[in-house]
Amino acid sequence: MRAKATVSALLLTLALAGCGSNSHIPTTPAKTKAVRASAAVPRAAVKFNGPKVIHAGSSFKTSVVLSHFHIAGNMVGKAPVPGMGHLHFMLDGGRFDYPRYSGPNGQLGKKLGVAGAYSPSLTPGITYSHLPPGRYTLVCMLANNNHTPTGVDAKQTIVVS
Image (cartoon, rainbow, N blue to C red; front, side, top):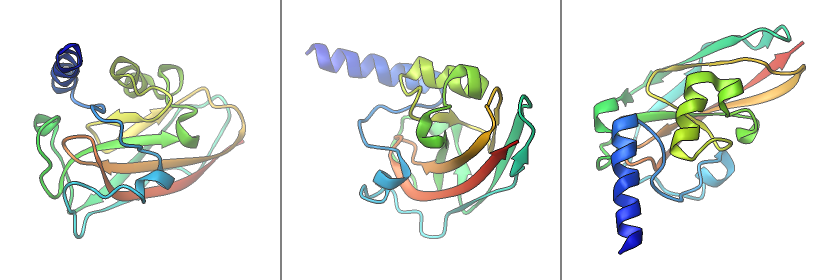
């Protein structure tokens, strides 16, 4: 009974906040391939449209271009609808998906209990900052309304010099 109350409270929080994960389905790219999406997105695609090299100490904003996929903030937490949902950004396996690095997206992730896994987003972009020099992998995953992965993602290498 307590678990049902906890799940109900979490679902309400997710609906009000606009994103998150009310399931324990893995969202890392490697595991996404093993989990079938609950809503087929036959032609959905995502592609990065942002910088690949930035200077250390700088913030950088990256964006994605979506095809056959609509970000639907008003549908978060509801049943999957093919071609609708939201985004999960993940920098180096979630290592930099905390408020210090991913700002408001990281704050939302912390509030929803997914900090360190991914940064949720209801917009086709995210800003990262405070990254030390190095080479990073940024992933954007399309997520269904109910937060399950669609199986569609894009990867981009970011170099901080």
